[in-house]
Length: 316
Image (cartoon, rainbow, N blue to C red; front, side):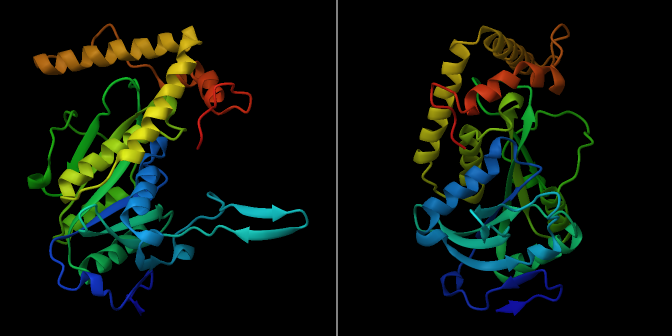
């Protein structure tokens, strides 16, 4: 194996499967900040499961010790009766996978770096240059005041306007917290490398649960942008099961169902206003705050994941 100069990443010297491959794509999904509903993590897990036997060949490994804040995000360990049995070390890697038609692509996944973002971006660029990656596609998700009963909204973004495949719902500029994944897109653009991404809008009240529908929507966008064919059957089935669990809970909790109904009305008003070219927000229907939603859905989350849930609960 060969180390790049900054020694943050170790890249495999010889990857025969990539010899002569043109127009290679790399998908990026980092756990952490941009992962409401675990949408990115679930998408990665699905790609690994369907993309290669044995989880795919690891072609690059990042030195997590230089990037991870262990006190903020403590890795799990197993304590067996009177001793520590194992340690689940965090891993940040690039895997070689194949789509349903056998087309190779790369997947960069693992915990978002807590430190050395600039060095991390340079290290990723080393991987991009080493394997002649033509396009980097990022996926993520953020909590929004939207209902789970409506289509998943997606924010499209890119460092090259020619890559955009959808119209942004946002007007003007927004100041948002930064992330290593967002900075990577910016830096790759400065270095002449095309990168684009998709952010799913996850219902605020489901942001702490697995929400496979958002993962499915993200991978549908990845298919179009990266020209890949991905079998999404299992992910769609998981999404249907989750929505059935939510529907059962709402049928027996009128107060929570009323909040969802209000979000549905707000969403529909927003959609009509956008279609008519008028204001995107109805003046008499302000967006609920995170605190409002948190109070309303405290029971909701407990009901889906509580040990006494008679309807099966939601499996993480």
